[in-house]
Length: 189
Image (cartoon, rainbow, N blue to C red):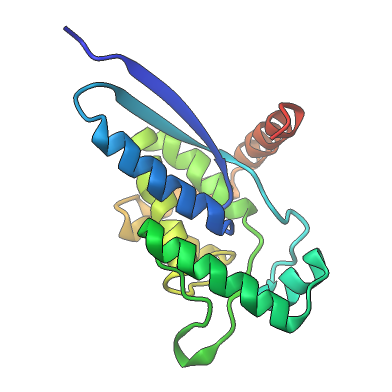
């Protein structure tokens, strides 16, 4: 008897802490169903901040401006979020080594890379890359808005660096990602 397959589309941004936490919880639930159902996960692009400048922005500043919160309120938000993330099994560090502040980055190229990973190597490889991007941003304080950093992460996850670079340069891939983003927005995501 074959087990049923369920396709799950995760609309996510690598800047979204709730996406990292939610996926960690989801993966635990899927592991509990091992042998009962096969889950195929595909990551779909959803940019939280499509207008984020290439040089990024301080996360504290961005949160304060976006939610109209004081520095103290942003600190409280981040403390509560860190507690939830720790309980979920995906610890988040807001201050980097040496005390550099957490940053927000433009993630369009990260979404292009994730779309390419799906096409090039399939859903499991795409998930591996997505999780590496979450770790790079929330735990390692890497500049995931920068091309070379994205290529480093892809290579570390077993992808061909030159092919990943070609993908980032591919205009058609950018158009495909924008179309997927638009589809998500039209669906109410």
